[in-house]
Length: 360
Image (tube, rainbow, N blue to C red):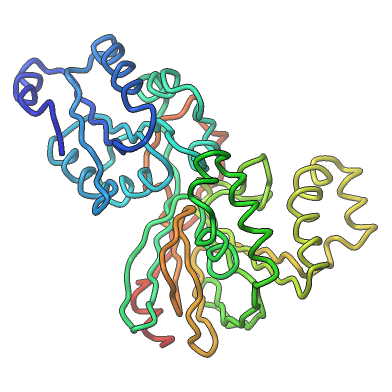
């Protein structure tokens, strides 16, 4: 549902730019977003803003397409990671910059881009005044237990197995009260019931490997809430996806997983002395957490036993196979400062649907 449509032709006739706000109406803070946008739009040369509500049936994809059809110059996504992801899916090849106004609990995508997550006026101001940064998008083709396939978009990370089950078991009331800490509670409760499963995985159309895992994570960035550095070398615009296989064999193995991400990655890797300590204690030889990186990965669950699947912290049912492909710099986001220049990488090739069906 949109409003403000009557001004579209008049504003275009005056040569003014126009923004569209795609917002989740159930999130707290929408009124504050309206106030901030109303105060800033004209000051930055924009006419009256087009406001488009998301719905339970369409969390932002159709709304983004509506904004593209309206020929807006800026899209402001006001919501959580799910809203931003749906907007990105609806933009397709449209190179319209997206400003982020985080509403909700996780907002991992915004946090990794240093967007203010608890200051709505500052986030709105950044949407109008920030610099454009092109970031990567993950595109996944997943196969459901009934054999059908679907295409999904991910900006943060997707998971198969334990992490998806953890999200499925998160208490929604607790999440409203304590935010991302509710996932910790769900994770502790899920560990005793987590059963490892076997997967066949292939990076960049190379050799197929088989592993016994608790979870497979395919990520576009490296930081989790609480400043936990899951993937130290991940970058949101390097043209590569990062894969983490969690392979604990028992409760002690889970402690080693936690030690890796909360101590080694966050603390020890930051200094030469810390990295030497990791080597001396055999941290680099342990196999509870295994990293890999590339432009695409195929994952097939051995035996076809469906596993829980999540995208950007949202439960997405069960799957039996998936192919993830990086789409380099496919989304333009408004940020406070440009990133440090990095060497360009070649884009991924191959149709996700074809590969998943070939492995079926």
